[in-house]
View 1: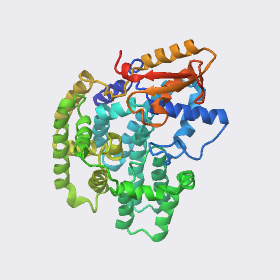
View 2 (view 1 turned 90 degrees about the vertical axis):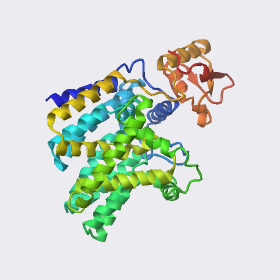
View 3 (view 1 turned 30 degrees about the vertical axis):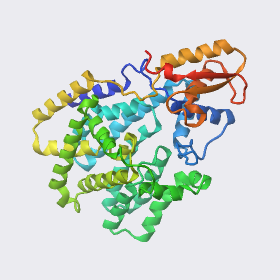
View 4 (view 1 turned 45 degrees about the vertical axis):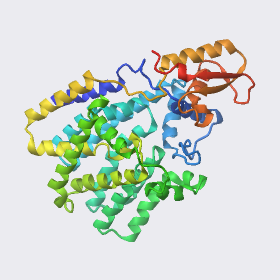
Length: 424
């Protein structure tokens, strides 16, 4: 029962002070504008919004969920956060249920506590982006793999379907297809089962494939590191990921990296010989090697590219705690982790961060000054090289507050975000 108190602390931190600390960006504004278009046009999408690669689109499922909720809640931008918050909580429940079945109750509780308190998982939830769904989908994918590992052939299609659904939320799960295929190969499934898997993957993604067949070329291009980008920041990316799993304070991230590497080495040495007869050990070791290897080839991965295996360190830690530590020691560890997470909580802010309250003030002023006139918005500031100068957050808020946005208008309003960044 005491362990659940730690989980409650993590849940609390996911929504703590969100009214004044909502990270509303051009990216989120773009989500809302796209959903507004779907509502205004009465469209049920077969593809989602374009990614940072303008020709590459997400699947539609996120927008099937988000769009009706926005209509119910009158387009309130906070809908994005509360949806992400709800998904992250359901993800904690799914994690507990799945790991209890695959490992045992202690490992399930320990891993759920660690995930709930992790700065990385809290931060990703508060960003309110669509890839928070990976927190829910990943345990389900692991469970489907476990069933297929156990010889339950009827779940091969459903394994493919779950994997295919990931593409509605991100593409960082792509290397896990190697793990899935390895399960089918090790367990000697037939050729028809591979086609069942493929059909499951394709069904949620027909819209993406029909929209642009270039995706079939882009996926191996990026997965196997055929990009011309420099890899100079790859090591830093891993340090950021490992460190932020345990600490808010960036100065302590090297400790998180050291501990993560220690756990990886110990777990590998202890359990590598059991991978042929223990699914969980197989999955943890093989998926970690494959995804980390893929990210090294990809070069300079942002933190959310780690999300498909973000819980692996916590799973490994939980298995080792269950085997080698008594309950009192585990309890002390959880107390320390809770104190660190609560006492030193500080929402990381990128170079484009402008407080939501300030954005509302700017947008309201623009609406009042232009009244019934249509407005063309041009933004100066970080990431203004993206389409529409990364101004979609302001465009949405101006519409939300009663203004009229028209990209063809002669009435241009320039917003200089360099003057607004980090203003309280």
